[in-house]
Image 1 (spheres, rainbow, N blue to C red):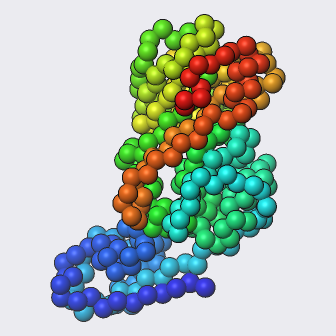
Image 2: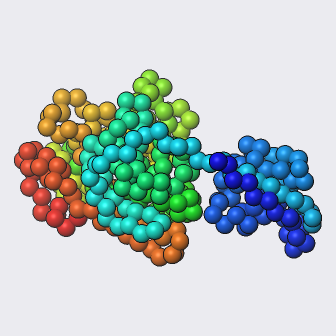
Image 3: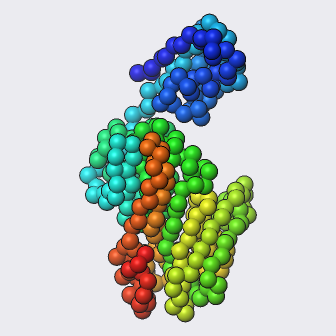
Length: 314
């Protein structure tokens, strides 16, 4: 059932934009969400639909805004084990296992992180990203393991999404790449867009490219392979995979961007989201979480004949 709220504008609000007024009055709603509601015709001022977010209110105006009830998620809750690294009333941090899809999509309606979250949290998830992605603030690829933050309410979701947009979230990945990188650190600063020849791929340049920046550092060299750490400044789809392939050091096991003929036992790209840090959207405290290199990553290195001296320190 939709919820409608009404307000009479007082003198001290006169001359203020309607979207700002509603954001102040409805503390659980972000300004961006308020703007969407206005654009969708959910606001009335003095009985008339108002779609102009810049409208400056006058004393005595009566504003009514209708907030649609979130659509019921038509995805089944599933009792799938989750490694929860941290949890409080606003968010949780999970260490996603390799092979798990983050949210339902055509061909993957079961067995996803969302299915598991629905079982463990029920309706205690933010609704901003719609019925298929409740609580999902950001994502990592199916065959990438590691840390994700999940929002339990819209306020937390907006706060975390804002930090991602401002590039202030700490995101460090560990990766095994082909060939020897002969510099100790560097940056790939190249825009990423859609590959017009393959809808599954992204590419440097491409269609509708967006800025993308990946910083990397060499952690250990093995001659034919290099273990590196990557820090994301932006978060484009497949960003690390695309940038490393462009840099001529594709991820080991990456069947989409890497060389053909890779060993079957690799099972996907050797990429782990090992460090995640952000400011708690409610408490304001900086929090940082670490997930050690998982066993699949270690086993693949052993099968490639690689013995690491640093992997236990990551």
